[in-house]
Length: 267
Image 1 (cartoon, rainbow, N blue to C red):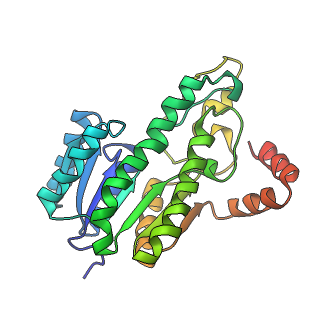
Image 2 (image 1 turned 120 degrees about the vertical axis):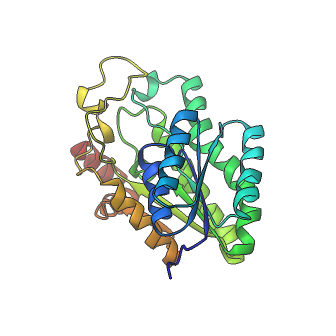
């Protein structure tokens, strides 16, 4: 019997990209999946595809930057499935721009989606998760561990995700909550994707690519989805992909100037 059989999973930002793959991976492992997203057509299409594949799934349209919609999201999941075992905080976005050309308003807006929305959802989920010794999965980034150039407010928001994840582990881990921080490099996508610039136009063209020009191979989302399931089963604290990025992070902690040099060489 699958470890995930009949467990209930909610994936925010689950109607496209990595979030959809994570939802599909949990569903294939026999979990019951709720997909939350902002665009009704994409949410409906994802839920229909999961059901057509013989999975148990629902789609819920929700703007998780709004407290009232978060407040209504979780009761819908409980009404349909009777509880919650896993919250995957996947919703978020990147950006491109020089840090001093990124306005306070842009910092605020990205923080609202990438971090504050995660806090909203986690606060709503924990009372449901604790009785089941459930899981919170926070999708961070390599930028949660080391900042880079040309990505505006993005590293600041992802560093906040990493700190929040550790606080949850320290305070609620002894009560049975499992918290997993996922720190991947750029995710492989079909076709070319360029991020819009939100600062000056003299940001290098390569920085507009996924990963902002970091010299690592793009990660197949299916590979990362399976790694998340395994890490939850083993109740691991963290995934860093690729694993050798940990060497950079360790060096940056011990020798910050050497860490900066490595980041400059790798981006």
